[in-house]
Length: 379
Image (cartoon, rainbow, N blue to C red; front, side, top):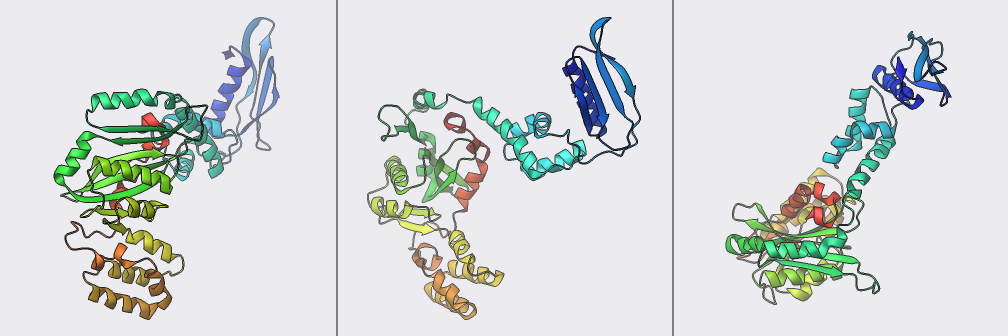
């Protein structure tokens, strides 16, 4: 066999080692000559190739095809770079592919038991390469804003810059409320809005804030969303102010229901902008915070009974049952005012008796892949 160069010859040997599941060493690796042996002690397999005076081709001089070793599951030829090359398209198309599943795929396809850290190192450059292909999007954000306004008349698309950096234009926030989503919500949805925020998953830092409505069939209806630098009182106040304007929510927010997950700064923003709105907090998140101190399936069931009590008499009864099992748990439960998370304290005619914020959780899960992308590709 003849090869164009020592590099091509070495690649062929590495490919052979990956296919046969053998670890091959290169005691001699030079431009004019390459010698490879099996790493297993006592195995006679070897191959030697070099250039000759008669030709410029790189030829095989000696080849002993005699393997006396078993297939290796600790094959060191299976590097993170070779894992990335083999599964490049799979990782790029599915950025949420867990490293545990990548490890199983390597064991199944390459018969090699690799570590989780090696799978992480293999996944990182693929995601970085995918992100690098979208560089320059933040410089086109104003063009994207104008295109959205042109193709969606009546929509609200707001872009703000970082006011702390004066000498440069640095992107800070991006708000979108399509006119079709707004009209659909006002025409056919209850006046119930779920508010939530989630982190970006890629190399870009920031958070995605969303406002999700509830259809007549109890399905989610996206109303508005925003990309912000972090989840704070200032960012929530900015987002809620724009949402209040687009949905024509009155100054007090009377007759509206807002459901959230105890985000930082959100309660203060709601109190200042729409103090008369019924602000609820997800009972599941409240219990998750208490679960750190009070563990047990019975406690969880009794907590949900308190949250879903239909009247205050039933709430007090379920609370007493909870106090019998864990007095401190009952005390911690009411540390967050039950007006925010128990159905017994909801106002009559509030259009919804939900005590959780699962609509927003479902939305965050549905846009998981998009959260790996920068501003334009994400929207």
